[in-house]
Length: 494
Image (cartoon, rainbow, N blue to C red):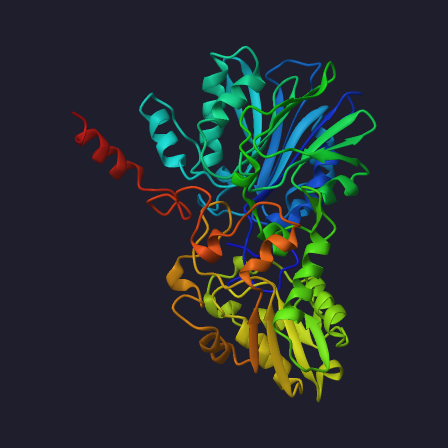
């Protein structure tokens, strides 16, 4: 496992599954470099692996060029590699694994050659019925090259294509079989397709630059390549982009608005603060979270500071609401490498001190309010509190811009099993003592919808009330034991 881009610590941090980016240039310009820069803007969504696949819509239908590897975007791709990737349509992907092992084979995009042509697919999210769909395919002879649910999606699209008039019809028919979170970008030989699950767990939007159309996870990727935002893809919508018809929408899978369930952590932590999701500013949501904390958990202090980067906006909101000065108390080393390459836990013990240092002049002799986005296992919060005390802070009051985690996530966030969560079977006072803070306050649960002006959200990781029935087996780790499972199913056949 690895840390998120610009994250301060890995063992107690949340990780999103991935980011997707697709583009179709109607003027037939090469798009590989645009995908590269789009992925660079989405690097915070996953640092484990990345990949790009492109195709020339004027060339042979099966000619899809792809390259992927383990590591950051600028580590995997060189100028020479990008210059070789000629094509006017393509997709890209950055990944952090929440289901399926961390290997190059599991990197995306997936490129599938089948009887109707070639597909390149990039997927963000987790399916809760991936095992069931995979079994169906294996019993009819499918051979899988990966352990990720994205390959299950690709196979079902290919299978549905055999009985569909168009590839977009096949994507729609395949999506009706899927349960869980998915934002998809699919490049066929002549079409760019985007699909978002009916609950809208993960973001997906459309942009335009000259005669090129883009489908991507966040609006910040559009800004990076000089594209303008067109609109969000709606929950349950499938869009098809072609030179002949522009953007064509299919809303057959949409559900009543009250059944939608956006991941609230996109707004609290995952998305870049300069992004907008479904009409709501991520930055404004974090400012609100800080203001609500100041209203609901006030405390007298001399300084409000955020744990970079995700705590900064909420800290500013707390300061604006409380009138307590906002200041920088932490200096982050922006050049620290990814700690997942270190083989032993002991090698990570000093990761907080390596990546983060306290400005003694800013905190010495002061009562400090420290704002962070979450406490997962609690294995780093105590160290950061201690760092502030060692630097001379007389009091350290911790405020968290989310409620306590009490349940795991099955939809693309690596929130661990309940037993590993610090809030499980503990009171807030218990947690305060463990992390060594003078006081501790969390965002109130009822404040979450207010962060996004009433948009329907998923709060299952806080309440255990999921938008759909969770899987009966843990789907978040490495894939199940196929041989044992197949043997059991064969023996149980009538």
